Length: 638
Image (cartoon, rainbow, N blue to C red; front, side):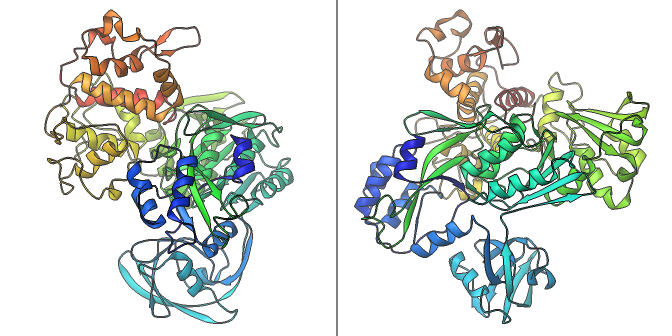
């Protein structure tokens, strides 16, 4: 498939959603043929029968499959390269109210004018930006050198106006600098054709001096898959960096053959705008044990697109336009998807503090005297200089770091000598350095047999409890409550739900968007009569059925186990008490997986035969199995 697409359609791209398009030269008949041949899933006849390309893509409902005009296609290609232009120095994306600033470049006119990431540009020189294409609005902002542009903006709901002078701007895709003579800080804004060479130059330049690498992918919306794969290889050496699966179910491995350019540990910084190829890079670094991810949960785009343009279909795109089609699903080196769920950081901290947290973790090995450091064992050994930890300037970052440490990690304080370490706790260190520690666990789970699983899910931001600091572990779950719990854990885009699939689920209900988001993912279904029955309790076999489908969605191991399930797999005595419709998923969770020595791995909290299928599921049981599934499928760090 690599050769097929290299020959027919150029490079795969993993990038954030672009713009919708106006009228185009591509005909509806031509678009239907391309979707049938290339789209990753079967395309319904109701989509292919639409009268226009615009209607067809709207009916498809995939934000990443788009028609691009010649202007938009060129802008897309330019966005992945080092670019020079005259403007004010911002990165942005279109929202409902206008153009949202996602980043402000250093030494730029925008920075001098006081603009910040998160500001929304609602008008440019009096022209409203609402409902206007992003390329048009950025065109208004750019202009002749030395001229000025007036921007009407919103910040936290407050309106303000700034006038900014346009100046030449060079936007480098990747730049590296050495901090404090031993920490190499690499900022990558996109994965384009230039990226790997810039990365290689930076790693080569500082490999003899740096003992830590920080790769900042915050607000990096993706780009070329191969660039991200090669970037991982600079740190991992020869390895399988990930997999792509096409519409036929065929899986292709991304192999990296080059030797590593450095053996030092990596900290990848992420946020909600870290997407696609950036998520591939982050997961590759974490899964291949090259380092950890620090910051906010990433966007959650785990599908790859192919660009179809006039180079491969000259009769279809003679006007320079292109069609970007979702052709593959991405999986990490361990087989985990990033689609919807994103990348959950090893240390979940506020996005704007991620760089300072990374610097705290980047102290050099203390050598013969450990008394100057704390040590965090999280994949690698990370050293924290005690003087810096107590520095008031680092207090917010230190507090965030301590609050994010999972219970499975080990924290130590140096006591002197080369091997002098004493076990400590985040609370104790917080007292020593004078910062506030936020305990993310619940106050009523200590006696639960599943307390560790519950607390870990809370540490990673996957459980919110009852809103009063409790989790109520022995409480039972309704169908609505389960959907709300899973939607939060999976990072579902509930805001995109426009209508309910069930007659008894209103989108105005607190659980309505969550129920429908999970239904769109194929994880839950109704009662067969158009209803969902949200207030009914969830029994064990219903819960296992949902979680089995979730495991298949999350990881290739379960998906392939399901496809290769022996015909008599569910005829074993331990499954006969379960309803016929539930046995496949129970087998998947309890009997399909094997350990290194051929032993059966059971993700349930007990043997399947010892669990009453019709008994009501408790909140602690739901959390226990959710943790087991997310951990075993490598969605959360283990």
